[in-house]
Image (cartoon, rainbow, N blue to C red; front, side):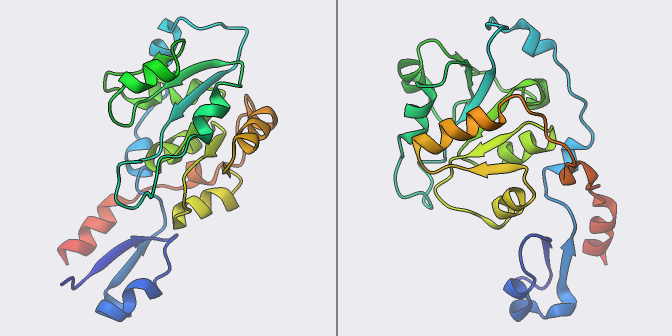
Length: 206
C-alpha cells in the first residue's frame, strides 16, 4: 500500500522498486541508530559506580530476541561461553531478568532503563544477539561479537566493515574474545556517517 519507500543503503533498492517504481524509492546513506547516536556524548559516570574488578576486562552481554517470531529457538552457546570467560560481566536483559540472575549469579544485571552511551563506550567487548545495540556498540568503537542466529543486511555491513564479528559456537566466542577484547576499533565508518534527517523529512513532505 506504500507509494514511497525510504530505506538504508545496506538494503538493495531492487527489493523495493518493483512495488513503487525506482523514482519513489529513496535510499539514505546511514544506519538508523546514527540519528540519535550522533547527538550523544559518552558519559562514564554510571560505569564508574559499578563494583567491578578493575584488573579484569569487562564484557557487556545481551541475549538474542528468542521470543521473536523470526527466531526458531533459544541457543545456549553464548551463555556457556560467558561462563568460561574470566571477566567482569554486565548483562542487559532482553526480557525478564530472573533467569539471568540464576544463570550468572556474579554478573551485574542492568534492570533500569538507561542511555547506553553511559556503558557501551567503556566496555572491553560487547556480545549481543540483537541488532540495534550491536550497532550502538560498534559506533562507540567497542568490539562486537554477534551471536545472532541469522545475518541481516546491516549485520553483513558491520561484519564486512570489520566492526563486528560473527560467532555461532561457544569456541568461536571465546576465540574472538581473546583476539579482540580491549582493542578499540579504528577507521570506524559508522562515526563517519551523518544522519541528515531534515533532508529525509523534506522528501516525505514533498
